[in-house]
Picture 1 (cartoon, protein in one colour):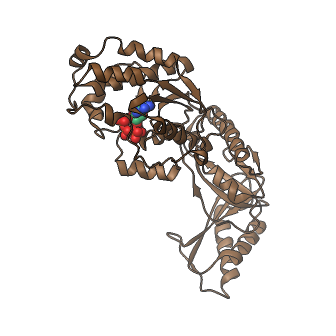
Picture 2 (spheres, protein in one colour):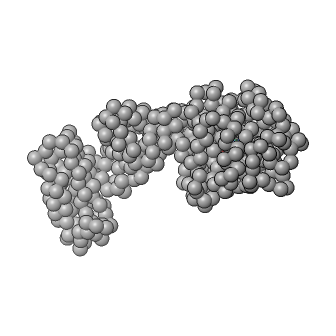
Picture 3 (cartoon, rainbow, N blue to C red):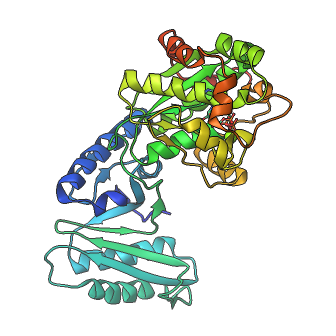
Length: 398
Ligand code: ATP
Ligand code: MG
């Protein structure tokens, strides 16, 4: 809900505010740049202004700008607000007008904060503001103040040069501004898990370089389109970042692996995949690999198997979904718009042998693994195609 005359989005960030002033400044620059890109990408008119600790968006399209702001990584929450002069009378008048326009019965509170030099306190705003709200609606309703759990909160934020009146704090994703960490390679399969993992890495500030292993006959053309579409659905959160996807032709290597190896081949396939990630990371200067794995979700993801397969690379493998249940991941995927109905039979199911390994030993794996498997990982990366993600709306039959 917006106050009448709303003309500004007040943006509040979370973890960045715990940093030193110098780092915070840099993060704020990034956030402002990303906010501008999000607005431009969505065709929303608005000027993003940088004010220490509170970026502001001046706009005639407050609702759309608020939507964009609450999709920006690093934003804890944001409010659609009306800007008024930073004096008690102006704030109290705006509260009375807002109450007259939106109050519809029930309990209310005025919650004020203040920063800067003023001849009144935030308690003054809450006292005088509460009384003004009451007076504005008491003829028609039977208003009641409830400071602990009000039905409606009138928010006031008084800054040095202006004050803001708002009615809600809409949550953003939190995290850190995108670009504040170094890039990571994200292994994306087009399933439910990996796009969520990539999103969560982005949420912590790392741009991702998506890598998809095209498994040839073990994958299929729909599989590839699905992967490119899920990457495409991440683009709306990062319009000023490059999500060109590395499509790695892994079909032959995987077919040979399946022909040559029975027990443990799933794990050798994982080792191959991490090495592919590592080879791309070297080329693009990424600091690690992100996957959608969770402890025990599949036989290749038992604690033991993850321990054994991860030793194939010195790069950290980040697993943002590590402790999540499938349902939690699905809920997140639906929330961020990457959920795809994963009924297309995809790679791993077909690569897995009849008897899967849940308790691998590296020595045993190395005994059976094709000698050239890891070399082939860098070879296929040299042959990778760099493909634009598919816009979700353009996806054929998905
Ligand atoms: P997802 O739901 O994301 O497809 P999954 O549940 O199918 O994952 P696995 O197939 O075991 O699980 O894969 C685990 C992780 O390995 C995936 O989350 C992804 O990060 C990576 N991965 C799997 N297949 C591919 C692929 N073809 N290309 C790139 N990465 C892949
Ligand atoms: Mg999975």
